[in-house]
Length: 276
Image 1 (cartoon, rainbow, N blue to C red):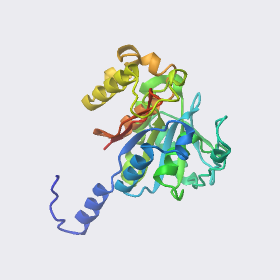
Image 2 (image 1 turned 45 degrees about the horizontal axis):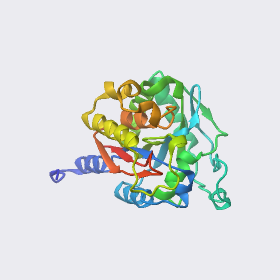
Image 3 (image 1 turned 45 degrees about the vertical axis):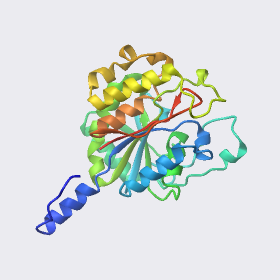
């Protein structure tokens, strides 16, 4: 356990409190939208993680479900809850996550991105998509923490998300929780919808294990080239949008650790990673 000397004066005490309150960045595999009603093993893991962390002053999410050509940032005072999916039970469409927006913080974040030569436009109309509100409904169910979303220019690949994460990493020191929300594996066409949590498809496990190995080693070059180097990369991710938020979280954070690991439907990875 890290030992910290007793603060010798008020300034040291303030500094110590700031260090203790430093938030990690997170990558959350958000699974099916039904996670909001049927949380399985992920629900307790997300609740436990939220309880372990200092309470955020605000939350910024990069979601797989907001792809764009350029960077966009929510700037509404009270964005709506968007049920951006179809074919689910009526009860799911009744779930609301009325977290407030944060227009002033959005403007500050836009300035940070501009300074990093990553200009972003403010979007006052964009609602919260399920990549944000589904996992947050399990972490902070009171929906009383200001929430922002940053879009995903997925055609630029992993390197851009790493740059964006690095540009915004300083927000963690201000008590802002940075989250990349996607999925460590995401091939919906090959899921076994009857499989229990103990069923793990070998090709999905091999990809997940390779990613964890490279994340633990800090091998940025291999991770950026995952599509060429990782086993079964295109099978696990026929398109990249659900993995790219991982690179945002990694770029924004530090030391890697696995907060939760598991699969649903045989091949849908539900891992949660933190970068302290």
